[in-house]
Image (cartoon, rainbow, N blue to C red):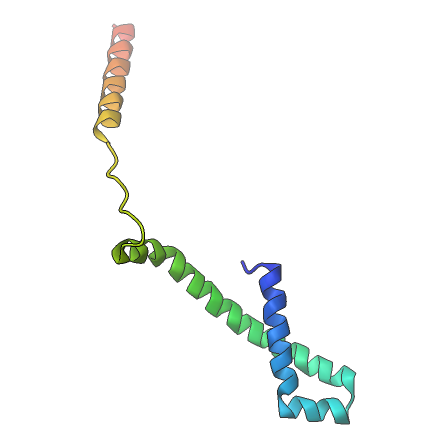
Length: 107
């Protein structure tokens, strides 16, 4: 989700761009500020929805592929391989002990 600070920043940039738009300038001078505000708000909302979708896509791409790219470019070291054998052995021993105890209790 986009933070409030980012929304405000996008809103300010978009509003400034919309204010520079010639059609909106004419609407503001002819009709007045309230009608132009409605148009600007509606267009800004549509733009923010498009920007929000694009930002969400870009963000998810960075989250997924960022670590892979950083490792490929040599910016970070590759993680050390995890030692799985001790955990597997401990699980196997625990399972064997549990089955031994349960079988002894039955018989």
